[in-house]
Image (cartoon, rainbow, N blue to C red):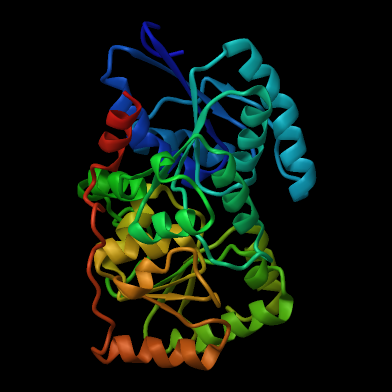
Length: 361
């Protein structure tokens, strides 16, 4: 537990790297308030022993007070195990308020446990919707938002989604995007110069969604398109070890003329440096859609929908679905100087966490 306990004990529940990026500025904003003590609980949903220490160091946050050590599993098994282990923690610590982040299974598990124990909790990054119930994250978002005491939203469209679903207006607070808080704070330190063989001008790729990496045929199509594009511009791809093994089995990265540069997973600062210097980013990540919009970097999203439509309507993001011809066409348009121009949404100003802290206080 951090700080002197005076009047309010806040417990943060996180489970994956994006959660820590969202929590970091909130933790910092609340640390300066004398009436608040804080505890950080990591479910262990995603845990990389090699990356965790450097990740916490780069974000400027201490290691979690408690790691539940849940580890991987099916959606049902993982959610159930987090609930079982978190319940005892909450009963013992008796927090005044729990903060949950994003849309991972940890978020849903904490929401259910808090509701059963009648503990108030707030959802940071509430109201985002893809309207695709086949996505597990969409289920997590919808259920969490129905149960939350307070809903901190990143953009006006999120407020509209919640009101349409019957959430009372007094529970909703438009505060802005906490992911951008972290980006703004650390952008001056971001650099990819420590990475080997990275061209100054490159196309940056991230892939992690099962719909793209677990379907062998689709993954082969994506990698084939990237291999073709690498003849026009070097393609930098920090890749998960499991995905790397699948790519090697397809032998696509050894084609003559292929400049598909596979990299080990990198830290936040290094990845932010790669984004900032990229000519274009190809991704299926929601957070990267937001970061590229703030950075003004063209983003092409390999999904049919997005829970962050403001990055499409206002930002630099375009949905290309799973049509590789569309991907290649849009990349060529960017390289020819016909990139989509975007703007930064309101309240994406690096001060969202301050507004959250003020609302809690």
